[in-house]
Image 1 (tube, rainbow, N blue to C red):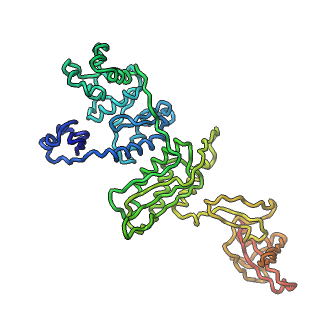
Image 2: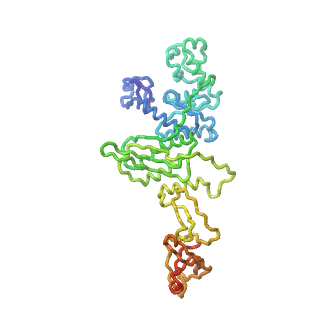
Image 3: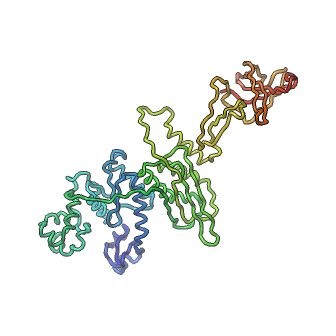
Length: 467
């Protein structure tokens, strides 16, 4: 593949470079060398969109991100090396992040921004033997001295003259007399050279994350299966993670919009909301939840674009600074498990206790969705209640004047009388007992009291079992 700008080559694939294609060649020259080459015209608008997406994603590694020359990004990771485990680890993570955006990268790492830029562009020219990382100025200087002079943008207008005086590398350029070079080529060339070697100051306008987040990506083709959309949705999550980190926020709800065909038969976008039990800013956790939701989604029509909104955000909480980890996992691990179950089973199928201040067990034993923020009612501490209540009370039969449930039951506690519900027309009058079966399982049973003839007309029910 070959990318053309004003009918000249501006970029090429590795195979085209091996065939002899070089930057600046005309279309006809490329066709003579490589007749099967596929040509593309450079699109500055889409290129700028890709750079903005990359900048947003890179903010999760450092707040100091800026756009460089010739479709490049500069990021100052000096303060982030220890957090991410060193320069090799952070480079691997940055490369994975860019791959999630669908962008191929050439990276360079140096103690100066211009030096890192030169190493990255030297790698982009296919110089695989050259070093791409230098963490000290002592090791950077000899590497820069061997780089071709054509890499330096400020030297482009003077390349013909410089090559004529046998100056083809940066080290040779540094050896020329500075006063004469400044009179001939101006200050810009020397300033750019000094910045690369750490002898000049570099000033940047760092990118600032916007106050709100909304990202959109168009799909390369119509997609009928929700699982296939996950690859493109991940690029949006990567940008969201960078935005959250830069703004020091955590998200509690995100909304994914799946846009369908436009025109006369257009239908509204399909909205997929993901609510989290605990706020997070981790891309891998959001991706896991989104994968579960998309796996159970049936699309009403093919999808042509995907957009993502950060619906609800809150301030990011600092991680726990306790010396010893919590037994059974941290609270964050518990919340992640709950969110994964909600994404897989649905919010209505993952419940949490929501006790109510009522003497009737079926009313007091309330349940609510795990995503709801509830304030449990204050209940008496000395009440003896079973660990499990049946969904509905089980009617018991009488054998030898004793209630029977799998075996004859023996009452082992005095009666606890409950009379409640008269204020809303749901009166209950019951006597509760703890009963023991022959297998030593303890049940919570009650006897309905009906008028004065309660002994003759009593009905026994089992309502729960003790753990």
